[in-house]
Length: 73
Figure 1 (cartoon, one colour):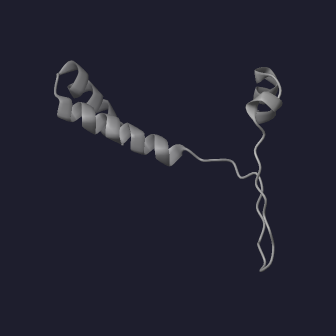
Figure 2 (cartoon, rainbow, N blue to C red):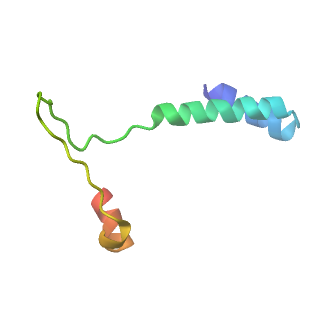
């Protein structure tokens, strides 16, 4: 995959061939999507009749940007 990305960008940008550029960009996006893994925050087995409530805090109530960054890390 890395070779396709390198060749696509090299031939697309330096060589001026838009088809290679599209191929390189597409391969890069596929690689990025495959590497993107989201952290599992909570996992449980649901039984019939169970309820699950998902809520999000609005950014204005989540604290400062530095505090939000500290929570993620």
